[in-house]
Length: 247
Image 1: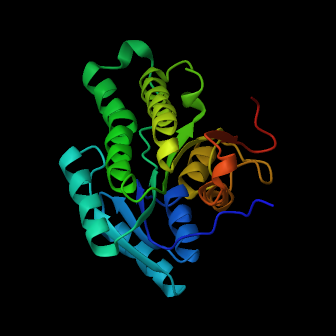
Image 2: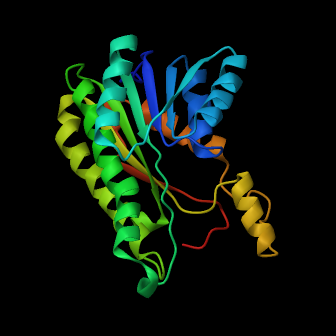
């Protein structure tokens, strides 16, 4: 009987950590015994997240970094591997959600959205792979969105970037799978239950039904279960959405 792959402790780098999914991912992987390295552009926020995780007896730290900056990503991954030895997983959770009519999107804005959600995904994934291939193992996960699957009205820039990131993940999965690196995309189809979403609903005079927003912890569990999958049954892409979401 095939045994489930055993977890290997090591560092996990999470790029794009905020109050919703990024923090939930950090908590879940730290709870599994990993040393979690959280990346974001605000040190105060990262310090607060790290303190919360360490208060539970787990290991986490925050590094201020711009995931759009190639030189910074090269340095971050070299630093993490030098200090921790093993890079077990890397999760790209960059946002860049942008909605605007096509006639109002400037070239600069389009490029800015692409640089975070697509170019950033490429650099992050490449640098993670650079350190995982010599190990012969590792997991690289990309956060996707509804826009990864279809372009919606007023989502031209965001959809273009997310389509591109999805293509990067698919290409990496096919190239790196035989080298022992598990690459997958998680398509999040719906709003995540977090303060920013509730504020948006309140502004529109709406309320979500019970469990009508995705639980960040539940999504994080999906990521973790993909990470520990046996290599004979790897997932390359999956979708998560609330029971009431139209699709």
